[in-house]
Amino acid sequence: MTRLSDQNEYHIRYSQQDDLPPLKEWLSHKEVQRWYPISMEKDREIMAKNWIGFSRYAAGLTAVYKGEPVGIATLFLMPYRKLIHHCLFYFIVNPQYVGGGVGTSLIRNITHLGKNYFHLEKLHIEVYEGCPGISLLIKEGYHEVFRQEHFIKESDGTYLARIVYETLFNAEEIPRSIDGK
Image (cartoon, rainbow, N blue to C red):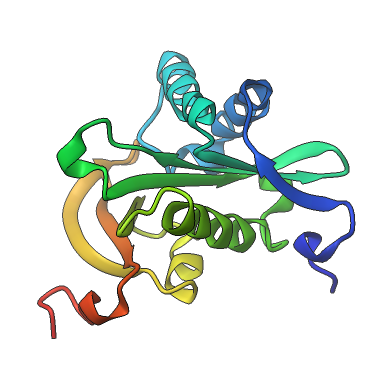
């Protein structure tokens, strides 16, 4: 099977304000909503505007297939001098294209952007227990540094843990487990 990310009509570009409508659309899909801390339309609107707002700093990347956005990854840059050496990022893939290499491509490219353009020392991503993106993060060298049980309460009363993964750009500093061993 040919992966979408291997197609000639696939490329990555910097995100732009015009990417807001597809981002809002993807965040409204029930299977996608579960992996983000939003539940109401107003929350989706605020999150999407904040997310795409970092495009003005060239901190977002959009995966494009046949001229249409199919995924977005964004660095949420820190405004404080003491914290500019690291940041959180999010990524999302249009549900129609999950499994086509878009997520892997976005993670690789946003990691490269953070390290080489913004000169970050580390990147973090917050995900929720069971998120399908976890396997991609691990494959790309991210490791779990924090887990908070019972963080998200689902509508059926079950709970999901919040898990923070990170990658450090100086390999000598990367702990191999949460306790540093």
